Length: 396
Image (tube, rainbow, N blue to C red; front, side, top):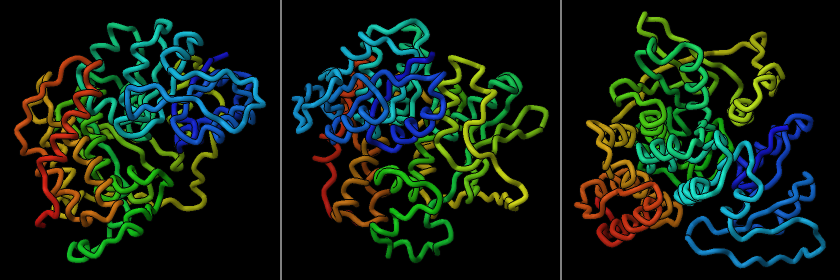
C-alpha cells in the first residue's frame, strides 16, 4: 500500500489527486492532507475520503496558523505544522499542489521534515523548481528525496527521457495550447479584459496559472523548469503550439527521430505516473479514458509568435549562460506573480504584465541566492524591492 500526503487539498491538483487515487483504494491510501484556507471544506474532504490527518498552515508565511473550525465533531488529527505531520506520518509520496511562492515554502518544509529515504516529492509547483534551481536538486540528492514532476509537460518528458535515455536525446520539445489569445490579432491585445484572459480553451485551473497560460509566462516557467529538472541548456529546449493539448511534449533524438506522448488533457495521468514510481504494477492499470482515434484527432503544430507573446523570450533569457547563483529565474517568477495580481486587481492592463516583468529584471538586486532554505525569505525580499522600485501606471 502506497501512503500519500497531499499538500493543497482544496486546490485543483488536490481535487484531481483525490479523483485519481479514489479508483485505486487497494493500492494507494491518502494518510494526510494540508490546507491553508477553507478549513471546514478540508475537514469535509477528510471525512468523505476517510483521511485521518489534516494540517492547516499558512504557506504564504513562516508563521503557524491558529486552528479554528465550526466543525468540532471529528476524529481527524489536526496539525498546525506540515513538518510535524510529514515527520510523524512518513509518507511514501508527497504531492505538492500548492501554487506560487507558497508552494516553494511547502517544498522547503518537506526537506526540513524527517522523511524516509527515497520519499517521492511529486511536484506540481513550478516555482519550487524555477526558484530552487540547482540548489533544490543538490539538496534532493543530499536528503535522498526523489523529485518527480507532476506538470503534464514535464511528466511526459520524464517518461520519454526514461524510455529513450538522456544520452540519446538532443532536444526537449514542450507543447503549448497557445491559450485564449492564440488567434487574436496582435492589435487587439490592448482590449483584453480580465474575463477574456480567464477563459482558457482547454484547462480549468486557478486564476494565476490561467493568466500565465494566456501570456505564455507559464510556458516560460516550464522552459526554466525543464532546464533544471533535466539539465538541458536553453538552446536545447523548444516550445511549439499544439492547440488541443493532445501531445503533451516530445523529445528529438540525436538520430533525428521525434517521440511524443499523447493523452486527453487530464492531470490524473501525471499525478498517478508519479505515484506509480513506488509500484510499477500501477502502470498496468488504466488510469483514465484513453484517446479514441475513431473520433478524429487533429494534431496541428505551429511556432510561437514571440512578438505577440514576449514573456516566453524573456523567460529564455533568464537561463542563458546559467550559473549556480543566478537570481533571474527567481526575479521572473516573483515579478510575474506581482504583475498578475495587479492585473486581476485592475491596477495594470494586460499588456503591462510583460512590461512590468521586463522592468523588474533590470533592477540591480543586491540580495544573493543562498541555500534552498533561504529562498522563501529571499523571494519575499525581492518581492518588496520590486514593488517599491516600479511605479504605476506603466507606460506601454
